[in-house]
Image (cartoon, rainbow, N blue to C red; front, top):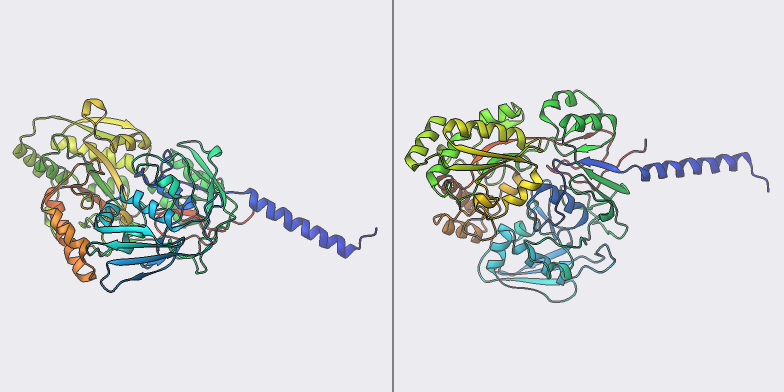
Length: 529
């Protein structure tokens, strides 16, 4: 059989295109997270890296868009009764888990209930509910026994803990604080467990069963289209190695750009630096164990507030002008919906001398204070160093125990005496997505609950929280949030240490990157090289 020259050229062109397609498929999108992935369950784990993992694998009923609006995601929509006490939700058709089984209303109900046993907003939502049950395969109904103004905020909560949907057989059989043994989601990517190296690398492949929404991707909402066949999530302890790997194309995206390298990255046209602000920014804070001395004494906790000089901390870490906001004194993040200055006079002018006076007033007698220092985290290690120095200068007798974040995170969520692995203080960082809503804020939303290890329980906070959660009017909610902030500062529940922007950075050749404040991997196109 003869082949014409035109036919041969056409065949060669097809072969070239096929080769390029194979090359594209063979090149995974590689993104680097801040710390290693150890826990795969987004409900039992409080870690951001687990949240990042879960957004690839699982999906949510409601999603937050770039304008801060809550939109249907797995849901087709909802109906609200005139008294706002009955909410009827309908799943959209075509939803399947990765094993091919249908996502049903029973799965949604079981997942919400499990999440509601762990999360601060979830527990409050469940406490306000008289019933949550499926009425058919695609419809479930939430009946409230009292007003709850943040139903959609709860179901669309964007960060730890996110109400991801998993099969009812898993959610019903696993207590909220216990890790699930099986990872079965319905999200745009499938986790390849056999390729997981805990603390180092996780791999994913595109989910061929996923049916995205028809709307354009917008924040966490809209169509979650997986435009690469494979994804690798990894970590590198050395910030310099991260930057070098990004510049050479070994990796494509860094969750956080190392601060010292930002000037160099800004001058490189091959790099794009994220610009998301407001609740996409981060906040340093000191997580205190209220259950153990000396932080069961409010005066000692207030001494920590005086230790935390935001300007010194942010400058020392490298978050200078344009990145740090040392003047921000809002527990709920400056630039976010519930930003407030109420009570800020208590922390506006921190002073080591005032910290020393508070320790004397409290009768602090050099009791040992165990500080867990996460040295593997590029964000937490330098903050921890400044915190250690300033606490010692104030007069605290610190027992600094250095280690990796994954190990510390396991200790941090346990209630143990000091001689059995307990702790007193941990330097932490949270995103505005976690702190901007009072009901999820670490210094307010966990008040007097038994699902957190920090143990704070301030009586005046309780009625103020109840008033906030029952209110639907936005203006009244903002006023109530200010009152909550003042009470939290007075009780020193969660001393904040400075708001800043630690932007992501990615190779400019990537297309469709959603600049949201944490890695959003769908919608990204990676050109073949």
